[in-house]
Amino acid sequence: MRNLSTRAREISPSMTLAITAQIKKLKAEGESVINFGAGEPDLPTPEFIREAGKEAIDKGFLRYTPASGTMELKQAVVDRFKRVNNLLYSPEQVLISCGAKHSIYNLLQVLVEDGDEVVIPSPYWVSYPEMVKLAGATPLFLPTREEDGFCIDPKKLDDLLSGHPKAKVLILNYPSNPTGAIYDRARLEEISKICQRYDLWVISDEIYDVLTFEGEHISFASLSHDAYQRTITVNGVSKAYSMTGWRIGFCAGEESVIKAASALQSHSTSNPSSISQYASVWALRGGEEWEGVMKETYSRRAKLVVELVSELSKARIFPPKGTFYAFVNISGYGLSSMEFAKKLLEESKVGVIPGIAFGADEWVRLSFATSEEEIREGLKRWKEWEKGLI
Ligand SMILES: Cc1ncc(COP(=O)(O)O)c(C=O)c1O
Image (cartoon, rainbow, N blue to C red; front, side, top):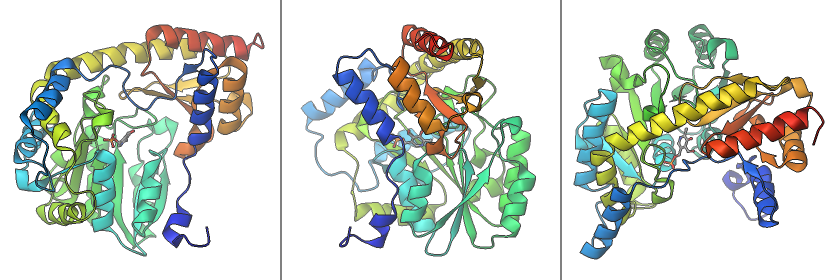
């Protein structure tokens, strides 16, 4: 530790690591573990996308591309933003990165500096606070409540900002990992007005957009001209096209921000894999049918999870409206989320992610990116465990 930078010393190790390592260990020991911890689709990358990857190799599309991504992929991204999000961008407003995580990292590096603050609604995706700290800024958590559908209460946002003149960015993520919450237009419009009043940048992480199965996904940047100008919309191919390992994400917005983030990327990772970029053009151009398959699959499983968790006597589910995660309240068990997750895993071989990792210690996240049989078996074990039968 003595020789590491302050920056390195301040990064929190992933809180989910202990549990996921234990799940892996038990599996390796031959235990039949039901893993509700997955953060990626269980469905494979569709064949036509895999074929495109092979074609890229066979064609020799294997050299450096422009650091900010190929023009073909930027154009495909522009067309997808139009088709799915009702957003009009030009290729100059687009940056292709090594995953949406990388896009957000780049954006924070160019938008904030020491002393700035970044508003993060909680529960939040694990990486946001660490990425904010790595950019020298301070996370400013804004708790959301189950009664508000885990959406920001505009009045609370206003109150928070009125006392924090250094707040520069708001990070939005919906459909939300970990809650599965989405926003309706009226609430988004209220939030947008507050962002205008305090002149905030908005990073809108919409990576689960097509996995909205209840209600409608409305992109923040599509609300108004003002929202369009202050928002950088983030997305990627990981979730919607089952391409987590390919590492392609992207963002679009104000050209000066994209230019700065592209320059940063050009001196760090440079271009994302040429093969993955080539295949991603196929995913974005030909993946509409697949988006429907994903939505239908996860919608069906969400209903099943809601039904089965409702049979538990001490747990309560927040019914997800999108993503492949369900947020389950475990305060009835009288344990912290970490203690709960460890106990459930040790005693019934069911793995869930403790909510403390997302800033919500009375909850656990249950991923239903796993088969219906596993969902049934996992919740059956949970029910028996709860009754003291395991
Ligand atoms: C909310 C959210 N944003 C971004 C990402 C990162 O996605 P990518 O694989 O494109 O880096 C994830 C992945 O878990 C996520 O849940």
